Image 1: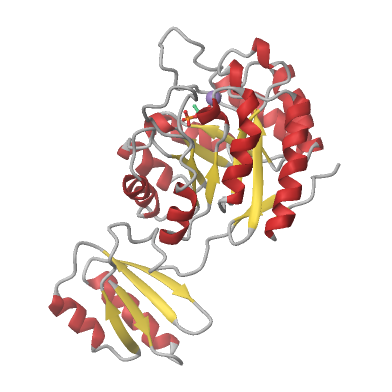
Image 2 (image 1 turned 45 degrees about the horizontal axis):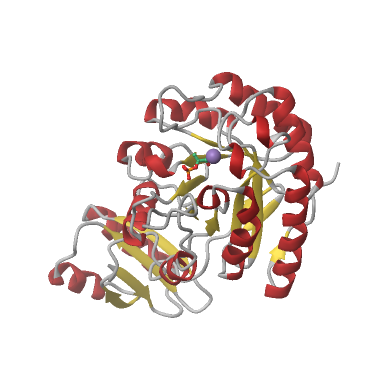
Length: 344
Ligand code: PEP
Ligand code: MN
């Protein structure tokens, strides 16, 4: 339920409401607006009697049920966008960021090269999988811990924050030592123990949409993370399965406005995995941004032809530079803020 405080309520009244919420075994989430304070009380469906109890507390204006099954993710509980800040840029609330890098970390040389030009062309974050979730057990599985160390070296040199994937709950602690953002891949988007574990890791999470997931299910997955006390979640639309075979997945551009009408969380587009082919990456990225996305995560490789995974869809450096130029122009046309390239 959502508890709307009266205008001009006192701090003591707010504290009393929070205490009562905790007393009945619910979790409070306070959201202070200019006009009023909202307190989400998150727990199993409240009874009319319980709502009446809260309505009677001093300083409370109204108690309303939260209509959506996702609670902490909903715009009802937090009616303003979540903005995540990194040393290189922000995402959400009109701020757009670009994370880019290879599909997988393959060597120090490959990763450093990518990191340097991602930074030079204005990217804000370095991506790269150290642990790769591959459809085949015989395909390249990533360099593991060595890959994490390579990412750390690239971060040390360029200052770009790192986003990298974590595959299982028992890896979370290790990956969180290196990553600035923990990535949950499409294949793990409903791995509930993993979602709970990253909810407790104290790092922002980039959550990919599962390839056969509805948007409601997607937000319920996000809710698993939020309900563990981690409100720093980025949702990523990365294409879904449809009957169409021309592209690798079908980018659901509509997911962007729909999600943004339901949630305060930043919504990003991954144009690489739905395209499956580098020629189509830039148009999909621009479509996502035009639809209102707060960021992009894009694959680029210094020598895509030699990549050990996703070779066909990774951009060459020149194509990444072209993408960034177009992103800058589109962001300006849309009135969005895109942090300037990181210098140094
Ligand atoms: C990736 O980002 O390289 C990846 C494996 O993506 P997804 O989980 O969306 O397939
Ligand atoms: Mn990939």
